[in-house]
Amino acid sequence: MTSQSTNWPAAFISRIREQFPETADSFIQSLNNDARVSIRLNPAKFSPETSLQTVPWAGQGYFLNQRPVFALDPLWHAGAYYVQEASSMFLEQAFQQINLTGPKLVLDLCAAPGGKSTHLNSLMASEDLLVSNEVIRSRVPVLLENLCKWGHSNFLVTNSDAKQFGELGALVDVLVIDAPCSGEGLFRRDPNAANEWSVENANLCAVRQRRILAESWPCLKEGGYLIYSTCTFNPAENEENLLWLRSQGGFESIRIPIDPSWQVDEVEANGIHGYRFLPYKVQGEGFFITILKKTDGTSSVRFPKKFKTRLQKASQLPDNWLLKPEQKTFFQHQDQLKFIPTHWEKIILYLFERVNLVKAGTHFATLKKNDLLPEHELALSIDLNNKAFQHLELASNDALSFLARDNFQLQLSGNNWQLATFNQLPLGFLKNLGNRFNNYYPKEWRLRMQDRSNTDVWYQA
Image 1 (spheres, rainbow, N blue to C red):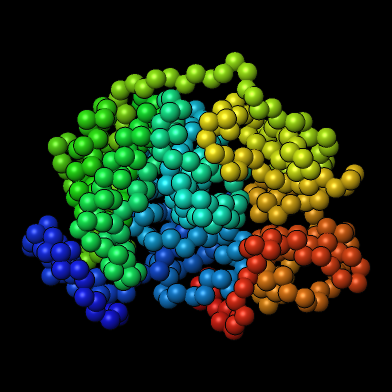
Image 2 (cartoon, one colour; image 1 turned 90 degrees about the vertical axis):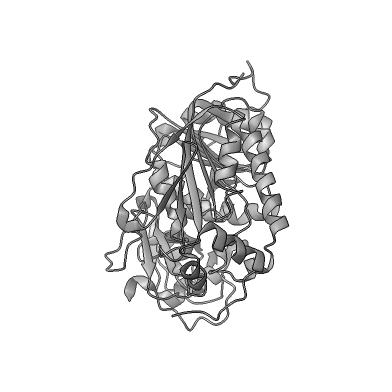
């Protein structure tokens, strides 16, 4: 199928014809084709049997035959999968080239809405720590929501500029920069992106990307890795920026093994290897990615002898709500009970005092008088001990009503606190009050769609 032909910017078409002289017609025609819908499974939560076509460079990626209404699938709300453009899942191949031992600190510098951060969370070892940063404050809530739904506890969310991280010293083992760009690779998926495109805007993007690279580069350790990507075909935002980066410090370009059947272009510029996704070759959108290993040193981190911030010890803890409590440091902030990975306590305190830390720790319970109330983050966490709560399996309509916080009837029995589930995956907590129940699904996340007639889901096709 093809979508309605679009009049792409003349300057863009002119550059494409110059950049790809032999294949320009095929390139331009492909921009009028429909984009493929793809999803990436959360292996910690969901592994269905499916005959769907796989995304060849992503172990958990699949192409869908058509686009369902994802908001009407309770498993999407449960963090069972993420709707993500296929080309960007090539991050997985880049991450697999990292050769470091021991726990790693991974910084996703331009993280919202969370596609690459949730992917990183699945690729990282459980002892690693992800710092997921978004400089635009209005985009932080969706990043928080997506990471919480994904269910891992080894992540932080920050809202800081690249310069603030560069001033930390050499702290980071893996720096991921999915740089804000002119968006040429998204024209097929979002033709409105073409309306915002101009030569001037593309040039401004290239300058901004250089600033981000220069300011964040010092936070990367010697021997650490930079993964840089964009969703544009523009050499000024891709290869030329990497050539410019040589003036900022030394690095080694790392090649990524690719299967010829993937139709991914490997490009090389002065010894720097990049990987380009072209819409007439791949079943994905425009994308560029490279991985570099830093070879020169940066000033080491100087931790204070004593942090100003102290974690208040939790006054009480539940007996069996969490798995592997020995690996967690529990603390209390006002009436909130939280935990962080014990191994990273020093780093988390350091970041708390140096950057704008929006979320540190999993909020798993709230203390109300002498009672502990389980929190929604606990329901979605893969650290939840599923045996700690009675489960209430919901049918599809009831699950959607629960997610919308509707008034509806349920047959309840047993313990006060119950875990609402769909296909055995937790959706959230409710409390049985006898003749009614309280719904503890977050108000700000509630399902707002009134028309819920189209509840077809891809995994039952």
